[in-house]
Structures are given as C-alpha cells and as structure tokens.
Length: 208
Image (cartoon, rainbow, N blue to C red; front, side, top):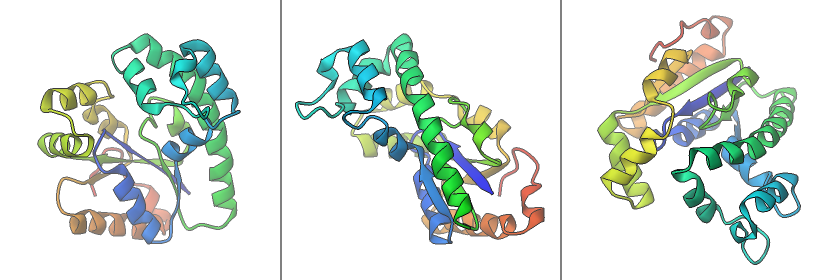
C-alpha cells in the first residue's frame, strides 16, 4: 500500500513521515526527487536555465534554489511555468521509486509530497494522510525555521492550498499541533490499522 502524506508549509510532514519510517515504512520524498531531477545535465535543469536565464545556476552548474524561489514566489505565471517543467519529471521518478519500494516488500510505502494535490500526485497513491497544525503553531514554526517575520510567513501560507481543503479530501488526518510524543502516538495507531485490511476503510476527513 502507498500512503501519500501532505499538508501545509511547516505542518510537520517530514516529522510524520520519519515516524512511519521508524516503524518500518519505506519513505519516498518528493523534495528529494525534486533535487534529483535538477542535477547538472538533467533535462529539467536545462529547460529551467533556457527559460529563466543562466543566472539561476551557480558557477558549478547546480541550480540556485534560493534565487529560483525568490523569482517565483510572487509570480504566479513563473511558478506555473516552473511547475510545468519539474512536476512531470518528479512524477515519473516517483512512479519508479514507489514501484521499487512496493516490490521490495515494504509493509507500507510513504510518498511524502508537499504538493501532492496540487501536482495531481494523489492519483499515484492508494490513500492520503494530511498533517494538520493549528494556525498559530504553524506560524511560529515557520518563522523560526525560515527566519522570517509574521507577515512573510502569512504570505507563504496563503500561497498554498488551504489546510481545510486538503483535510476535506484526505482519508486520514494526523494533528501535529502538540508534542512529538502525541504525534508519534497517532502515527503508531494508524500504522497498526493500515497493517490490517480494515485499516484502509477510514472515511475521508477523519482525524486519528
């Protein structure tokens, strides 16, 4: 079974994925794949440099991810163009990695993808888990993680699909607003349920 994990920025998606991994699940990270498909010589990187200019590359030919992020953050058209160049490559690599993990006999395969719904990657997984977090907790974590102020953090959150919409489409929800132990308890409970056939019949939007 492949379980997609998604959620808003700074919600703790990776933390939840790592908790599943500690219980024996195999994790495929879309963020890791995104870095792989823009390695020097990759087709996606060539397309990016041709469209946005070679200033988006470091001297060693690697992508200047910070500059790229700054260029597209407040430019919806540029972001759509970039996504059109990268999402197909990420999706293709994800299909390969997920298939390999399933064939390897993993009890559960996790696809950790921040833009799971936005990229249409929910079609590649069997069920979806959304990591939710209280708004103020999310803001505090984002500001601390990225060293930005409240206004900048609010803008980054607003640029994404809203949490409520993701939750409405989810099969499972883990609340990561509390302590690490509380989150791990929810993950452990869900892992146990997903290890049995009845565990995959949870109604959409239900909170563990």
